[in-house]
Length: 256
Image 1: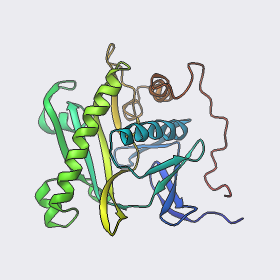
Image 2 (image 1 turned 180 degrees about the vertical axis):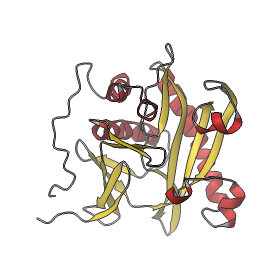
Image 3 (image 1 turned 60 degrees about the vertical axis):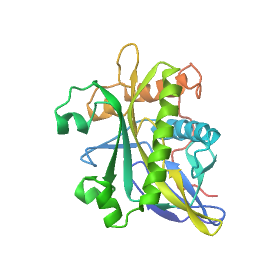
Image 4 (image 1 turned 45 degrees about the horizontal axis):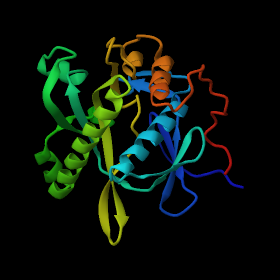
């Protein structure tokens, strides 16, 4: 048996060549970063929890006909996903003022927005992922108008669905980030949801207490980061109520 070929390593995941053509193995790491990599650390068990949470949410979204790159979960830290051409944009949906929009527009954190706001950021670490307009996107051919119409339509549907899902378990969905890719199928490209949906790229607040249950606990040195991720998984009934422990190996380069 040979070691799998690494395709790409990012801040939170490693991508490996998949077992079949057109597939990729997505490995979830425990590494955590904030401030575009300025702050680094480790959140024990984060990769395992994000794998399970993202699997659950991707499957739920498939049930409402949102196309995704997800195929199946392979083990505690890995997913098999379809190989897609990633569109170099981060799509951010904001329901409540938090994060960068607070500083940028002088808003009070926690202020409910009159309606969901969809923002676009260019995926470019060297430029610190700048906020961009649709005119930038189409002018520089990052995506077409038709693709952006699909992306916004999917994004708003996802937002409506997830807000209801999390409200049902006492969690307020403050904002979240999505990524999309192009999947070649039936002799044409189709837009599909890619990457992950987890406490790494969502803001979750407890509806009763306002407690933050996401990576902001790491960003702001609030402590109990692992417990926050575990709480999301418990409320989604992904892990049992008893103490969560990671018992598998965290080595991403095991043999096939």
